[in-house]
Amino acid sequence: MHAAGNTMLPRGEVTSVRFYTARGDDGTTDLLGARVRKDDPRIEAIGSLDETTSAIGFGRSQAETAEVRESLIEVQRDLYRIMAELAFTPDLRPPSYELGQDRVDWIGAATDHFSDRVELPPEFIIPGESAPGAALDVARVVARRAERHLVALSNAGQMVNPAILSYLNRLSSLLFIVARVEDAAAGAAPLRAKSR
Image (cartoon, helix red, strand yellow):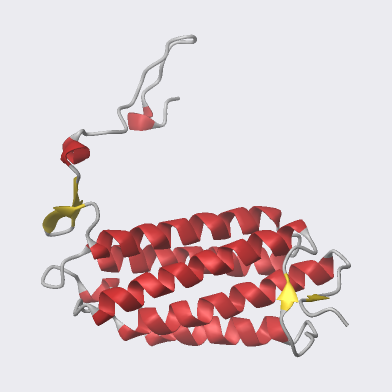
């Protein structure tokens, strides 16, 4: 069975699906309600969120802790919702596409929950004590970049849902903590940035 169109194909027969339209060859792309340049600040913000969810996906694929993996799936779904919200022009965006305060509350509660499971030194630590922890630390800095792009978009006068900014601010904290949870699961203690 071929996924595109659920068409049954005889054994050995190959079909191809076009994954490009060529409409963007001129350096433009679609928002939902407008055609814009690919270097438009909103496209830059959406792209940085796309990078974030991919980096989180890599971290999730490395994670040993089931609860961490489940929480990261929730985050990835929230990021797709945020990208969809940003992809609409304000006049066309349905209210159901807006990220709500409930998701900000959820990510804060998740961060608190995982924080109770690890003990951290009161200073900077060096990432890299476990493969899952390191992958999640990379996701954290990518998330921070996405947050900066959204803040810049907001400061440029684009209407950005305040709940998105709050969510992204908390996201880097969650990723930091779950990276330490994964380090601990691997039997690794935090490595202090400052030598003693």
